[in-house]
Image (cartoon, rainbow, N blue to C red):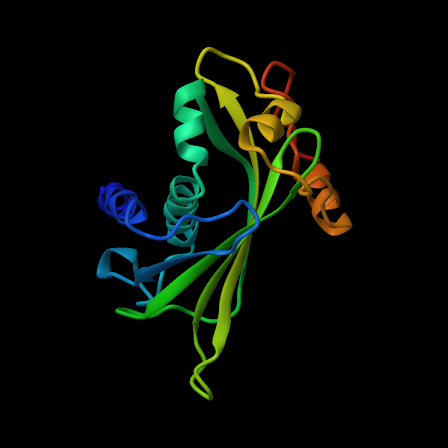
Length: 187
């Protein structure tokens, strides 16, 4: 439930923050709350993904995509995500999530999100964790929104193509389509 309140808070705050272009890095500030902790007293690994959702939501509001999606009856879903951890976030740590669009292929949009805190040495931004997300856009009426339609609606240009390693990752972790067979057989 606390993520619901965080999301609503950031939804309201996003309306008062500066607008973003599609290529801009969105910076969203957070604090590690007691409800974010695991038994080792640092942020639970699953919470990282939830907080990334909140930051992406704020970015969509600030760059105008949220309003366009609402008008067209579209919504984003995460198809794949991965996280790499470097340092722990501890109780009451202030941190920023830096989110940016990496690009897109013919089916999905790819984003990178970084958990950043000031370095103890010189105060410069230091990466604590990095997540990569592959997202699709669906219609509330059913079906997938084609990438060409997204690009036209959002007025984005120059985001086609993605780094080779992200393309491999997207292909390697993809599951069969929702209407295809996907038996659980262990090898």
